[in-house]
Image (cartoon, rainbow, N blue to C red; front, side):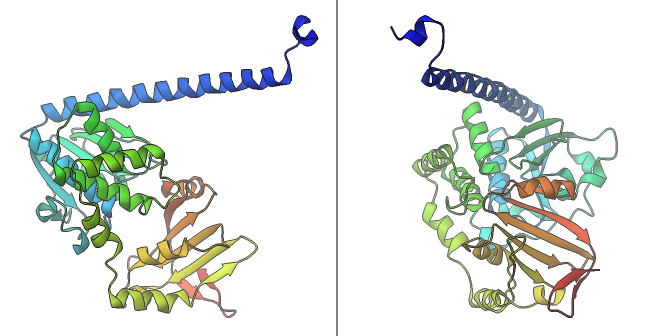
Length: 351
């Protein structure tokens, strides 16, 4: 026996092993409690939707593939339960998503919303209920049951039931829910869920892609999800005006070496041009090698400026949350009131 063992001194390697064992224990413990919490929330959602008679489904403005995929998939689940439902969004959805089931049934505009028609509201991929356009209709204490399903790390869970998990997409959370309730969905539902996962992972290129995410995507393809259709409609569909818009504004990029930020400013006039598509700009900027953070400032007609951040390592969600916004650790945004004004030295300021 080693002398250090005989005298009760633990060798360095053994200490390292003990540290690893303790770390694994507490990590597994945290994961255990988190999984128990999610199972409880999934059970509550299942029970609530089985009792519901009329369900309203809502998502965030400028709906993307994750939002619309989640709405489509949950509509399929409600149909399987023989429930009445309506999908209402505050803004028009892009034509790129008309391949998703039930998008033709989506109603646009909250002005004539009659909340008393519904006993349950499903809030999907919103990050914050205020973003859906229904917050003003929930002031009455007798409001419907609110269920939130989301994946944004800054979502504080303002619903009565909150299934919020910081993973790739809301569609991945819904995939887990469907697995839990043993929902035997068809290829249309699988396509909707895969659309959300592919959108928010950038075809598995973003850091939020985990091994579990890829496994679930493979399982969805095995269920009949049309990967090629999604890829064609979502990632290979830029039209000539959009590409010209991209080329024009890439020449206006500015790099702040001190802060290591690459940024682009888009005024109201810029966004009124033909082919104005800001998502393609944000995704393209993220491919740069130098900057840690990319920032796009977009001036709206409502006197608000949207500031969108993407990062390689920095937690931009924490700062966005402090400024009234939210999002993910490496992709977040917030709104600030003001107007974009160009300075004499070629820079920009907000007035």
